[in-house]
Image (cartoon, rainbow, N blue to C red; front, side, top):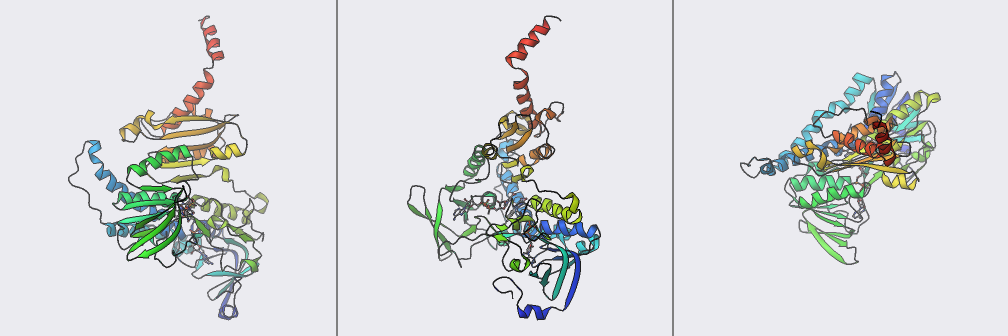
Length: 493
Ligand SMILES: Cc1cc2nc3c(=O)[nH]c(=O)nc-3n(C[C@H](O)[C@H](O)[C@H](O)COP(=O)(O)OP(=O)(O)OC[C@H]3O[C@@H](n4cnc5c(N)ncnc54)[C@H](O)[C@@H]3O)c2cc1C
Ligand SMILES: NC(=O)c1ccc[n+]([C@@H]2O[C@H](COP(=O)([O-])OP(=O)(O)OC[C@H]3O[C@@H](n4cnc5c(N)ncnc54)[C@H](O)[C@@H]3O)[C@@H](O)[C@H]2O)c1
């Protein structure tokens, strides 16, 4: 066991059987660590990867993959119930076999697992994996199980875990977190969801569409990191699905009564109320995995948000990088992967170091309708004093959205004074796919005029980008001055 500072104990020191010298040692085999380790190995660096729990980390085992698989089953159930709207009378009410749904979630994880496995790391990239908990015993040395690893460079990619708030009575009630919700042994009749962020919103809707009653208890506003106008479209759908959303409602106590969870909530007007359910999911944010890592011994500074890094993702020990959720920045799989690649670049090419640019990051919340974003948010533009205009289009003007029976949705493109696309928000059917083209536009610094010559295939949802851009260009082009000039030109026809 490590002591309180995380430094290796005498026991740990005496257990060490062998020492490995490596070029790169990566701690954590989630999206960030696998990317960094695979790249280092592929480029011929002697690389050691250390993983304490499951290969693939949260995304594969307790995050993106199981959540999107559960959502896929929920959508099938919903489509079947909704079939009459498409002129197809359902034969009977669909019967959800929740345990089969959970079994499918676990099968999809198993089907993908090889991609993130120890075997693949060895066979394809020549990386050796140690399955043990790592902790630093010095600035260039970790102990993991019975191995001491000395390396020229380290990448810390230990991720994050569910933050458990200090609510009186919560501990020991057997609540669910993202680590247990995808292996439930019964379908909740009524699920209480604490927190209305992306995890809370996605899981609430999936459970509701699979037939559970659901209440979201959110102390602020649901999906508070996204554009409020667009979140409103999602909120309306969640309510229409039958989800009870309590916003401005903090939980002050939890108790168990028989099989029920009773949550005391403080309402916005200062009163209290009790809400009960047979299952409780805690999804109120994440806590960086920095404990018992021996960060003090390594000279790596951290705070409650996570390990402190500069724009090159270097920690206070310049030979140690911290990437992915553990540095407390934007917590997404694609960010973890991108940061893993940047750390690798900076280890290999000291003279051509790359910075991580948070201003080009996309994200998608997989509710129905999807909520997607890339680049700067409207509030960031305001905070930074950047002058911008908004090019908009509604899904109700998109023929394909009508054909799909989903004409609710909005696209907002934020365009600065030079015409550059600085950010985009979208809500609507497959908004996550629509945002892809804007991820490229924002990362390439494209101007909205780039859409002028683009020919979008008809009828696609993606056409909405061209519709918003055309509307914007039309307003710019057909000013009263330009109209008058055109009239003048016509006189010479
Ligand atoms: C329910 C849920 C749904 C999500 N959905 C999405 C989504 O749709 N899209 C998206 O982009 N993101 C999503 N995320 C976020 C995404 O899962 C994370 O951002 C991503 O997994 C972070 O990757 P990482 O490599 O930083 O950390 P992790 O995946 O957490 O990996 C860290 C690894 O380090 C290991 N570790 C920790 N400490 C040690 C130690 N001392 N020694 C050795 N190993 C150690 C851990 O066991 C773990 O395997 C979701 C998250 C959750 C919880
Ligand atoms: N689709 C995706 O990409 C996806 C999906 C799930 C998670 N994630 C990632 O995981 C991160 C964590 O997700 P999350 O939903 O746990 O966190 P979050 O921080 O995004 O949202 C947590 C919510 O809980 C609320 N809250 C906090 N304390 C509370 C309390 N005591 N009572 C009631 N509400 C409370 C907050 O106001 C907030 O709205 C996300 O920020 C995102 O980066 C991504």
